[in-house]
Length: 339
Image 1: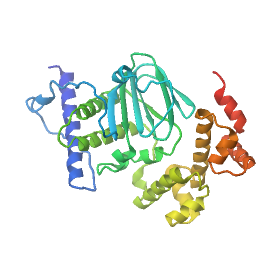
Image 2: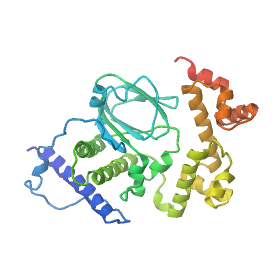
Image 3: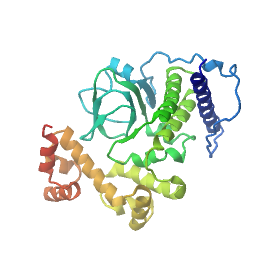
Image 4: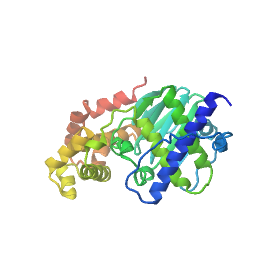
């Protein structure tokens, strides 16, 4: 056995134990999660179960669509993901391009696929993806509840809750060490997903949490240790209400009254955590939905305005220009103009 193979086996065993510890802590309803890499010595006989580790054949997702992981090679064989039509996402999507070229369009913005890059797209976005044949990597899809409601969910990956409100795709370029570490975790996730071992979902939640922590290390995210649980919960509730009620509620006071706080306090706490005020989030949510309807439904300005609760067309036109930097007509011309 080569030194590299032995080293890989040790790392894999450590990650397995780490995820298993998360599952045990979750079962005990522990409120504190700690990730500890064991530093004890292993004999090769102890690691023998991982010596001939292999990935089982791909399979179609079961009746629980809360989580799935596939290789891009398998996705291509099933004619999934790389489709002609745009799709509104119901789950978080993580697309890891190890090798390949292509394009991802998210809410009208194009992003070129590059090697050794991970792309994370939140639910509610309209995504269209195309790629050359032979792309290599992984596709992961999971519902917000799958990770947020897990008792193993840590503040290290809590950035997903705030990322869920942003319109842009998040990407990170991997170096060799990160590629190796995430490859081990992805293979283990795929192994657990493709089999029905005891406490399978608990292990998958733990492994996904670890994977997203590694991913988030390259991102400039707010340190959650500086925030209180009360502030986090307030922002989480506000963002959840916003996604549900923005069609009819467009003032900060509408959300503040439901959350039993003042509009000024809500604006201040939301800005502290997300970098933008509550009013900014409300405006951007409305603009984003207007853009989606203009791009993918070919709706007129009048139809969009009324669907978003604007009785006055001139008011909507002014609102769109003030928040988008151009008129609705100019935006549509620019968006539909061939490159």
